[in-house]
Each structure stands twice: as C-alpha cells, then as structure tokens.
Image (cartoon, rainbow, N blue to C red; front, top):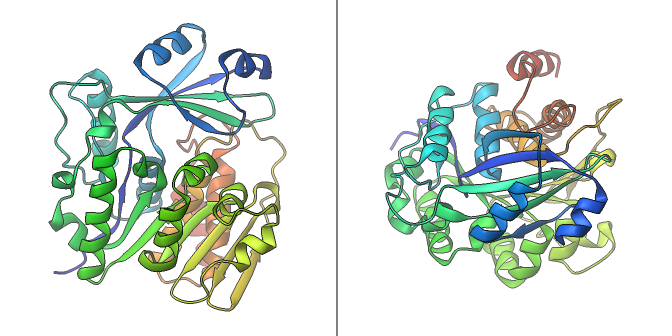
Length: 331
C-alpha cells in the first residue's frame, strides 16, 4: 500500500489545563517538580479547585507532536481515545481543524476524557498531574491497520505503557508498521515512566524501534547512571537513530558510530517548557520525513521547541511553517 501519511502518532488523548504555581503549591499537593504523576478522579477535582488562572487546550505528548508536525506542513494522523463529552469534542474538533486524520471512536460511557494539570513554576519547569480517564480505554481494536500501513513513521509515547490495553495496542502498531515497511519511533516520555517499565523499554530500544526521543534524565534513568555520556554510549550502535534533548545544552543525535552535538537556540526568556520535547520531535520528524541530514533534523527540532517555551502552552503562537521553511531553505 502506498504511504500516503507521513507520520501517525499514538498516545493518551488528553486535555491540558496549564496553571502558574509556586514551589510551595507543589510541596503542598505532594508533586515532585519536573515529573508527571498519575491521579484519580477525586484528586483531579481537588487539585482543579485550588488553581485559578488557567489555559485549556487539547494535548497529550503524541498529540502535541502531530499538531506541530502538521502545522509545519506534514501529513499527519493520530490515534487516541476520548469520551463523547464536551472535552472530548473539543479535542476532536481541534485535530480536525488542523487537518489531522483522526477516526478513533470515542467512548460513550465510563471515565471522562483525560485531563492533565500542568503546573508551571517561575523557573519555567512544568510538573504534571494526569488523570488518564478515557485514554486508558485505548485497545488493540482501535489501531486501524489501514492508517498504520499507510504511514511512513509511527510515533508512540512511552506513557501508553501504563494502561494494559493500550500496551497491547502499542505492540500491535509496532508489528503492523514493520510488517508494512514503515518505521517506528518511541518517546520515553518521563523518567518515572522509564523507572516503572525499564526492562520493557530496554527491549523496545534494543530490538523493536527505529528512532528514539528522550531527554537527559530519561536516558540516564533507562541505563541507571548519573553520567550522560555513559547513558548515550549504552545505546545500540546499529539500526537506531537517537535524539536526546538536554535543555540549555541543546541536543545530541546518534546514529551508528556518528554523533552530532546540536547547540540550543538563544532565548532571552523561558516561560513554560510544556511541550518542548514534543515539538522538538515534531521538527525533527518533519525534517527527517523530507530527507534532510540528521544534524538538520536536530536543528529544526531545536528551533521549533524554542518557539514553544517562549509562552504558556504547547501550541505555537508564531507561524512555525514560515520559520521552518526559512530555516530549511538556508540549510
């Protein structure tokens, strides 16, 4: 079958609620700064009642990535589960507006559409409390074979490993992608997520994926070391492209025995790092799909991520396509 879709991302379909808080608030609610924790229905209601000024947007790691990728000009699809409630309809309409192919059937009963409370502290760090809700209902039957077979790249978020049914859906997508000649990318998502499923993630990295996205803390957690160089030197040397972000230190791209160190963009003010890694992946994938060299992929990823952290939320507020086209023209 002809590959008519550039990238399909699969993940937890979540509505993000972004709020500015201080460190004391995080301590009071028991959330460790810079991490993601899972919460239940009662907790989401309790936390929500204690925050005031918020920004609401459709989100979730993989959704953020495909939104960024589509804005850049790529042909994208998304698979993720919402409920047929108000939040779910907002999520669906948002993807539809951006021309992202989305056909996953919403649930009618059961938990509400997933929500993530993104707490942003004055140092621009984001800490997340996530109610997975209807996103946990994603199951193998939701993986549309036609979409996967039609995709050049299938991008999966590590968070999918939490719900058992979603894990099975994850495995089905990998199998379909590889059987049809497509490639598979994985985002490690969160260092705590890595700790929960380290052995399984190691197997994925070493045997089942073609491309890896992670940040510095996630890759060090995967290989249980406090040394960044030790961690990246532990990655497979063949059949894997790894893009590792390091915040102010930029990113490192590895493939076979080659290594590229990509400097960070010069930014005067960082307001919110929500979605930075997701949008880095969007930029990287867009350049990769369009057959640019890996160092250019990393540079475009950094350029796109730099735009996102200048404001609150994981949706761009400047013309990413214009920015990208100008960069790639000069690359």
